[in-house]
Image (cartoon, rainbow, N blue to C red):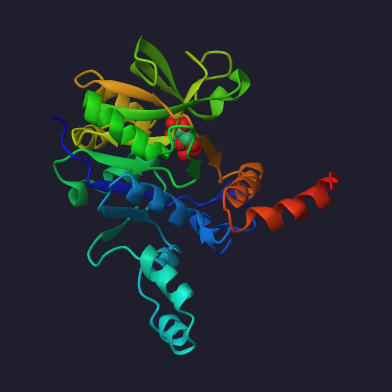
Length: 295
Ligand code: G1P
């Protein structure tokens, strides 16, 4: 039986250059999709998948992330005194349990592989999840979000799990790309991975979409991985090395993933997440129809 996945790493040290100037003084993970920060959506997804401990790899100018996952005494006191119990309770429900968060810093932007390696002592010797916080997901027909589907696959196959999604072939050079071995339908064996392949050379159009379950052996490998694509220490290069001794499986997520790190993706996420909210959908749809001239 595979070991239960209790901890998740959120690499949140990135600079957010694709959405400047919005991210000049606000971490990109704190930009709002509907009424909560992008990062809160990811933490919710992790929590729904059974994660109990949330590890944030932050950087300079990211202190508000830590504040967001703490009590806000003055605010909570004011809400209670004004009888705004619904708002108060919503805040309390979002709050991670005491001791369920850890924060460590990546001191220099050396790449995703290096960011994950920074969490090695907090994770210790157990398999763990990784959620890239740019990517936020809405459930598909299976009714669960992406990380839950990865953990389900881990329970079935063990080993390491990577969520994948199809993109148009001309976009593969922007991502990590996998190629398919034995196919089990919703999941498949991965037999090759490449980070940011030059245009026209990708082994498939299935990209690594930002959710992983990894064996702890990845940490020793990441300690020695050489700089790869973009001059950075790449997680994909570490995974390629780990794949020599441990199985990797891909999960075809049946829902939808939005890349909030790009301007279009961020705007699309706001529309999709607003439309998925029963309390917001009717009024929002009205406004949307007016804007696109369909109402
Ligand atoms: C990272 C990963 C890449 C993955 C992508 C998803 O790249 O290295 O494998 O496909 O996230 O967004 P980045 O977007 O940090 O360049």
